[in-house]
Length: 298
Image 1 (cartoon, rainbow, N blue to C red):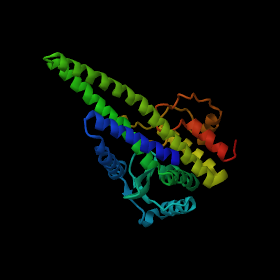
Image 2: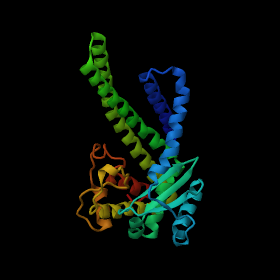
Image 3: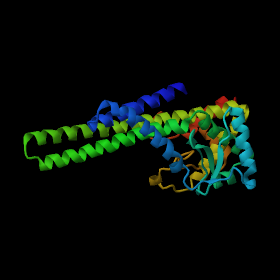
Image 4: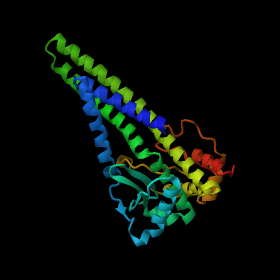
């Protein structure tokens, strides 16, 4: 946890330093730019992530959900987060928020429909694990890095092209070539940084699974079963890839319709290390194997 926090701070320092250097700003502006960068992400992230979510913490109709989250939070040693429900057309759960604006755990209505109490409890234990580990801030902080570098790289490529097109002397021509080269390097670096960010996100998901397993013990098997149920449901759902939705499990083609059959398949499946390299979550089979091992069922 501490290493992840230090990594995020150092990465943001380097990105802000690059931005200041490209804009030819004095080094002292870093002391202003970096806190502003942090403040922006802290304030905007809960708004972006919780769009369409309804706070049901004080709604008697969702008292069971609220009490589950409260008990899990107390067992985890954290302040109980607010509880939200969304009308998204697929089963999903996520944590969001920050220390300033408060933290929340959200679930979709289809998730409430397909999971039993034990499975829902296990999924909430995973989400509270994100709250305990400050994953919302860490993942968002690192996620802004490729976005910022990609924007700078795109701007430099465009500027370099314009300079070459309108160059009237050798100095303008040279500047255009330098801008193009720098823009290309930043754009290429953005891809590799994004791969790292996705790996970091999968790492945090694994730690949230481990948190749930430590709380639940042998009952962590219900988290694996919940993943299987969600995957079966998602096999018949079309998700718009341009909405930037972070899903508990990625949509994939499967033949199984029984969650226990799917768990058996996953427990025997050999998954390539590259199978989830472009995913925010580990491959379901990897997650299930780890969860079952932690639960003492393998």
